[in-house]
Amino acid sequence: MREVRTQVVIVGAGPAGLVLGHLLHLQGVDNIVLERRTRDYVEHRQRAGVLEYGITEMLAEAGVGERMRREGLAHHGIQLRFENGAHRINFLELADGRAITVYGQQEVVKDLIGLRLNFHGAALHFESEVRAIEGIDTERPFVDANTPEGPLRIHAAYVAGCDGTHGVTGQSVPALVRRRFERVYPFAWLGILAQAAPVNDELIYSRHERGFALYSMRSPELVRLYLGVAPDENLADWSDERIWDELATRLGEGAHGQLQTGPILERGITAMRNIVLEPLRHGRLVLAGDAAHIVPPTGAKGMNLALADVRVLVPALVAALRENDTRLLDAYSDTCLRHVWRAEEFSTYMTQMLHPNPHDEFENRVQLARLRQVVESEPTARALARHYVDACSL
Image 1 (cartoon, rainbow, N blue to C red):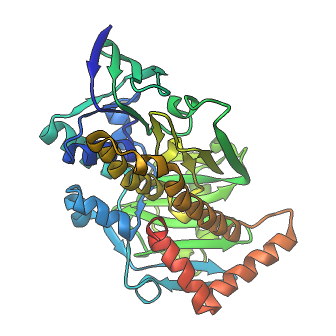
Image 2: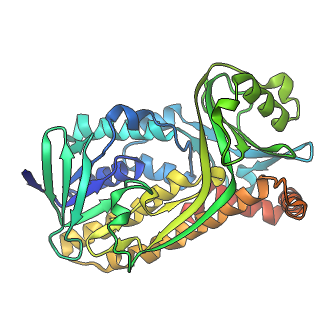
C-alpha cells in the first residue's frame, strides 16, 4: 500500500470539498481531495443552481468567480403564483438591493476542478473509494482508499467529510455521539432539464390545486423545471407531452401560450426531506455540506449552506494547524448549526407553503393564508426576500 502525508484530507469533490480545498490552498495548507465518482460525472451532475448574494461574493473573493460573473444570471426577484394570480417579490426593494445568481452547481465544480488541476497542481483523485477512516479520536488519523493507481493510505492532521448524506464520513462519527434529525415529506419533485429558451427572467413558484410547479433556468438556452408528484411516482408514466402539459397547467397565467418546449435532456424524481447530523465535528473529523445536512430544494439553500459551512471551517482549520489554536474548531459545530437550522427552517417554510395536500383541506387553507400574508404584508415579504437572498449569511 502506498502511503502519503498531508495536512487535511478531504473526502468528496462536490462544491463543499472543492471550495474547502481551494481556500486551504490559498492559505498554504496542503490538502488532498478524494472523490469516488469520475470527473465527468461530478462535472455534469445537475444539482442546485441558485447562489445567494453572500456566497457569490465569497466565490468572487476566492478567485473563482470570473466565469460566474460573466455567464451567471442575476435575478432581482422571484414570482409567486397562486389563486390564479401572479405576485413579484422584489429583492431590490425588500432585501437591501441584493440579488441572487443563477449558476449551476456543475459549473461551480468545473471552475474549481480546472483551477485545482491546471493552476494549483493540487492532488485530486477521482474514482477513489474510501474504505476506512481511522484514528479520528487521536492526533494521527488516516484514510484508506482504493484509487486507480492502487491502495492508498493518507495520513493527515484532520479529515474533512464532504461526501454527501450517504458518504462514509458521516457514518464514521460514533453512533453514541451522532444524532440524526430527519423529516420526510409526502411528495417529491419530478425535475427536467430542457433545451428551451426561458420565457421569464426570474424564477416562478406556483401553488396550483393540481400540485406544485417551479420554473427556473440555467442559461439563455436551458430551463430547469419541476413538478410536485407523489414519492412513489413512476417516471415511465410521464411522457414528454404529459410533462409539458402539466407544467403549462400548473404555471398558468398564460403559460399555455408562452411556455417554450424543447428536447428534454435529463429527467428524474427527487425525494423531499430534511436531515441534520449533530455534531459536525468529532475529534479530528469535521463534516461540511450534504455530509452534515440536507434541505428540501424549495428554498434554494443546498449549495449555499454547504459553502457557508466551508466559510466557517477554513479559518478554524488554519488556526489549529498554524497556531495550535483549536478555539474556532471547538466552536465549529455550534457556529454552523445556527445557520444550518436557520436554512432548514426557511426551506421547511417554503416547502410547506407551496405544496398542496390532497388529503388535508385544513392545511391547504393555511397554506393559502400564508401566501396571502407574504404578498399583503411588507414585513412578511421582506423577511422572505432577505432569507431567500442571504439566509446563510444572516
